[in-house]
Length: 72
Image 1 (cartoon, rainbow, N blue to C red):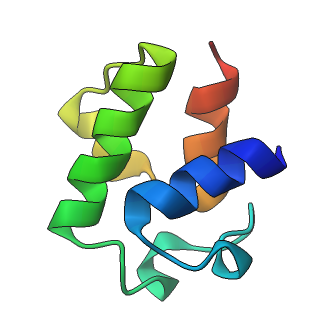
Image 2 (tube, rainbow, N blue to C red; image 1 turned 90 degrees about the horizontal axis):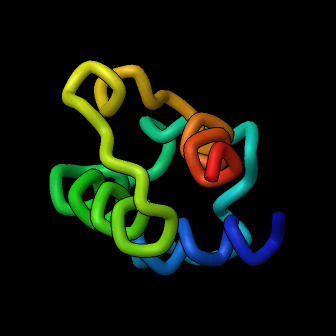
């Protein structure tokens, strides 16, 4: 899981210590429009996960991103 958390931190250009499964994305200043695009791109490239708009809107926590990563 640490590797996946590090991938999320890298995509968001955030400090790794800030990225925990229970962290809500609205708590992260890096979760802005560019952060969303970076995470979507990482999921597509590394995990072949392509999210629809409603799925993206439903992402509220780091754990939500992890669930998409673990689905593959």
